[in-house]
Image 1 (cartoon, rainbow, N blue to C red):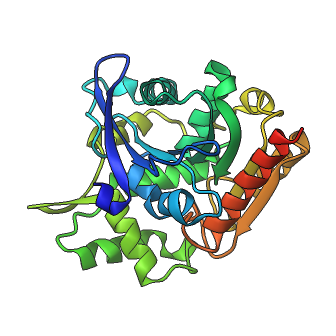
Image 2 (cartoon, rainbow, N blue to C red):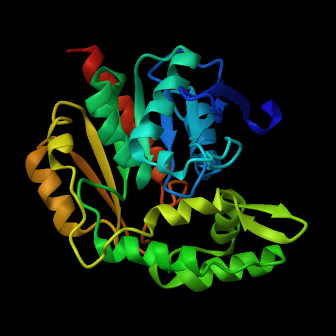
Length: 298
């Protein structure tokens, strides 16, 4: 797939599952590599446009690795759904980085990917050179997660691309008024695969069952201790202005605890902002360059 700007990389998880990642800019050896971690039901395709920018168009092109967690994209499905958890997925990411020979990197995590980064800060803090969190923090709003479970439970079964785009716009359009037709089409291409039966979500349907036991009437467990452990790591946090999962109050508390944290609020988008829009690729690239230069000259 090098003609599309990336190559496919397959490796073995600690428990034997065959897992997949995309590697962009494989020949780029200058600068920290960038590791992209997607959301709960998303996959490596979510980062395609951003990865193309960071690996080829940015002022300082970097190697970029975008992971498919177990049960997503081209990675094997796990017969034991209890393994669909952030701890196991963090271990899978570390196994992938080891197979690629990467000891340190910049990390970009969307939603679930950001939670995995919090866990990596406990398991192997030295791997984290800098972090970009996309619409996620130590506190997940129960209403936002309940909304995700609701639309996953009632996901439509579109037969055509146009129906798939309409379905996504119907569910998410109110939170994303800034998006245009091309944005919605890219979203469908990222999260769905085309089969004889139509366009289906590109993840193990059993993933939905992992949310079945969550009691949304009670506050969800937070990760403030894990976040506090990241205090020395340069951090950029992106929030969708219309996000229901990541509150402005949580963003403000993160800023209070991590005084050097930089923030971007994306107007007209909810959970989670599309990282290829709103000049975000250039702003993320500039942040990575600035942080790396500061570290080099200390």
